[in-house]
Structure formats: C-alpha cells, structure tokens
Amino acid sequence: MARMAAGVTPFRGLSAFPITPADAAGRVDTGALAGLLERLAAAGVDSVGLLGSTGTYAYLTRAERRRAVEAAVEALGGRVPVIVGAGALRTDEAMSLAGDAEAAGADGLLLAPVSYTPLTDEEVFQHFAAVAGATGLPVCIYNNPSTTHFTFSDDLVVRLSALPRVAAVKNPAPAPVEAKAVVQALRARVPAGFSVGYSADWHSPDAVLAGADAWYSVLGGTLPRTCLALTRAAQAGDEAEMRRIDATLHPLWDLFRRHGSIRVVFAAANLLGLTDAQPPRPVLPLDEAGRAAVAQALAGLDG
Amino acid sequence: MARMAAGVTPFRGLSAFPITPADAAGRVDTGALAGLLERLAAAGVDSVGLLGSTGTYAYLTRAERRRAVEAAVEALGGRVPVIVGAGALRTDEAMSLAGDAEAAGADGLLLAPVSYTPLTDEEVFQHFAAVAGATGLPVCIYNNPSTTHFTFSDDLVVRLSALPRVAAVKNPAPAPVEAKAVVQALRARVPAGFSVGYSADWHSPDAVLAGADAWYSVLGGTLPRTCLALTRAAQAGDEAEMRRIDATLHPLWDLFRRHGSIRVVFAAANLLGLTDAQPPRPVLPLDEAGRAAVAQALAGLDG
Image (cartoon, rainbow over all chains, first blue to last red; front, side):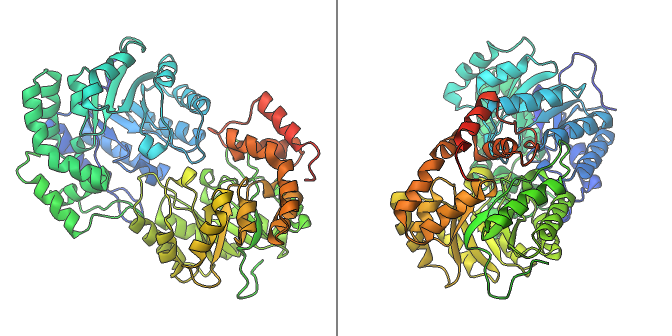
C-alpha cells in the first residue's frame, strides 16, 4: 500500500505520466512498467500519474488496468504517491475502476469525462458525484477537451469542488501571458486546499511559475529529471532558469504539437531503451523520419 | 441467418436505427429489442441499423453486443437486412466485433473510427483496412464527427472505397442548398455501386431528394412509418409531399438539435410504450419539461 498520510495531497508539483507498456493484444508488460516507474522514483517526481491519456487507459480492459495499478503500487513501495486514471464511458464502469484502484493501494484518482454521446454539464456533474461518492480517495477533475470532447467551465469546476473528495483539477494550461490571471481567477473561487494544476507540457511550467499547484506532465513520465528541474525552477520563481531548461525542450514540444505527445513519448521510450512497446492500434508509431526527429530532440537532454 | 442474396446492398433507402433497450448495468433486454424490430419490419424499412450511435454500441460490452445481434437476426428472420455497428477504440476489438456480427448473421457492418487519442488519416485508413480485411460483410464508413471526433475528407472516403468490402459511406447530411453538389461531387469519385448515404435526420431527406442512396435515420428506428413515407417521397422526387411530411417533424428535429437525438428518441420510445429503458449513465433521460415537449411533438404523428 502506498497510501499517504491523511491530509497530504498527491496533487502537487510534478506529476509524471508514464506510458503503459503493453503488447499488441493489450496485455500490460508489468515488468517494463516497473522499470519506467523505478526511473521516476529515482528522479524524485512528486507523484506518478498512472493510466492517464499517455498511459493509454482508454485502450485497456478493466483487468489490465487493475494489473497495472497493482504492479505500480508494488514497484513504488510507497516512495511516490500514485494517481490512477479511472475514466470510462459508463458511470458504473468508472465507479468499478475507482474501486479497483483504491483496493490496489492508489493515493488518488484522475477522472476524465470520457464521452461518445456529447455530455451536458449536469450529466458530467452527476457522473463525478457518483464516482466521488463511491471512493475514499481524493479525485482530480481531468479536463482534457482534446480527448474527452467535454470542456469544463470554471463554473462547473467550482460546483464540483464543493463535493467531498473532489480535491483538484487538471486543466489545459493557458497561454503564458494569461497564466497568472487564469490561475488566480479559479483559485479565488475554489475551497482552500483545492489543487489547481495544468497539463499541456509546453505551457505548464509557466502556469506553475504563475502559482499553479501541479504540472501533470507527459514528458515527465519519460524524462523525469529534466522535467523535475524545470518544475523546481518554476516553483522557486527562478524564471531565468526555467526559461533556460524549457528552451532545451522546444524541439520536443514542437514534435508534441505536430504528432501528438503520445506518439512522441512512445518513440522516446523506445529510443532510450526503456521499452519496445508500441501505442495501441489504431494509433501508429511514428515513421522513420519522425523517430529521427525525436532522436535529435532527445540528444543532449539529461533524461 | 439474414444473409442477403449476393450483390444486393443493405445500404439503400431508409436504414432505421433503433435504440438498444438495456438495464442500468448494460444488460440488453432482447425481448424489448425484438419488439422494436418487429415494428420496423412491419413498417417495411429497407434496413435496420443495429448498434449505431442511437443503439448505444459504445456503452455495451462485446458480449452484450453479440446478444443484441443474435436477438435481432432471430427477430427479423431475414425480412429486413441488418447492418451492425462494429466500432471500437481498438483495432483488434473492432475486428472481433465484426467477426461476431458476421457469425451471428448480420448483412453489413457500420464502422466508426471511435477515438480517444485524436487519429490521423493514415491511422483511420489502416484501421478500416484491418477490419474490412477480416470480414466477408460489406462495410459502411461511419463518418460521425460529433461522436467519433474524426472527420473523413472526401479524399479519404475515396481512398477507402477502393478497398474490397468497403461499400458505403454514411456522411453528415449537407445543408439542403448544397445537397445536390455535395452528393454529386462524391459520387463522381467513388466506384459504381458504392453507396453514398447520410445521417442527421433534419437534412437527410433533402440529400435523398438530391440523389443520395440512403438515409441512416435515428427517428426511423422509433417512427418508421412516417420516416419511410418521407423517404419514399424523396426517392420519387415528390418534393411537395416530402416537404409536407417533413414539416410535421420539425418540432422533433428542433428537439434533436436541442437535446441530442438519443435523449429524445429514448423519451419517445418511453412515451409510445415501446420500452421503459433509459439511456446509459452518464447520459441522462430528459427532464419533465423535455418529456412534455417530446409528447407534444409526437402528437398526431403516424408512428
């Protein structure tokens, strides 16, 4: 069990989102996953975001997701809190996944309003209320319109933040020029202690510099040392150091925007020798030119 | 087995898409489904679109989808061809679902590029090639950007139309003023016999009037007689009769656009006494005011 001390939130600092290595049939390679997690623990990330979008949760069965959580909790041995993605199209399925994660020893949940039929605000509210009401774990609202096709307004986040156990939000990072205003506007409306965090790696360090609590990082799952240094600089208000490190990552951010971050970090993990696993079909690995560009972007980075 | 004679396409005329009655846990009520299908067969629809978006395929397990297909094939007894939705996030799962539908006696497949990670054209092409290569059934490309979040260009449809077994496309219906140009532009680029059809009920009759081969109809699954009369008027080029019938449906089209068609047809099926089933959570039934509006819109319609 990696259960944290009461009152400690897993939703702060650098949350590193690893890929979930699996074979072509969707069977998770728990040994390779443990290797990735060891790398994250050794770097000292603040939390692991297991089975996020980068962790291909949407493409894995309930049984495989449970295997992944169990393997992660065992591999990390309480050194790093584990946030587990519990998103599913059906409300009952999301509740079951939340129960599985809690039983396996997760420290928090990340809940995306996965949709097929476009959902209304009321439907998403009731979905979250049902899942949060069925777990003892703190829940982070996963606002990722590019994959779930639902966009949380601040109004809805505020309404959800009043529910027991809804403890955090992971929003798309605003443009740097707006970051301070956006972070402050939301923070003024949510309860004290509610964590305001961001994803989209190329803008998230600026959000942390502007006072956000957490960066939910795709690249942090594969290059944890570099992303942790970037996070610490932003947290310390050392903008010059933050910009220096961020500049070394611009080629990767460009590739993220061009190919989608998931394809790029699978290629990076392959190139770094961390795993041979490929994304789940229909998602294709990068082609030769794409892999060469990733190799070039990785050259000289610390890991 | 409802298998059709060789060379006969199920992708023509009115394809009626029923809801799939299921309990709160996602168990399909095959008796209620058979009742809905009997109504469609009695009306004489040209095909049934089983497990489409309206049929909540995305919310049902593989086992329940198989049960639904088996029940439908048995209930229809070869009187009406059955097109079965085989969409899934994973390519291997879509291939399995296609195999299940074929084994159960379906006459055609409807394949949506369900996405979580946004997909590239090449990924969708390879996904379709894999599924079409694993089935003996004709496949209809299901272009429904509002649910799948992938948009097929005509270029991609044309590329796919060269694959064996890819026999049809179900596109979002164009605005009526553009219908003839849109239908003709695509038809000029696909092989002879490739079926060009449309969904979005409020614009599809105009597309049929403009020469489209098929209307994939949500409302046709619940009010088959009215939708069939509308289809026959459009096919016959009787625009006055088409407009007359269509005008009686404007209140329903307005509700479709306002609430999403799936919530409206569940309410309609409840109000007509066809089933007590509700949409799968998180999708919520219409509230009291919404149900009253549906009741009013149904008043005086033929069924």
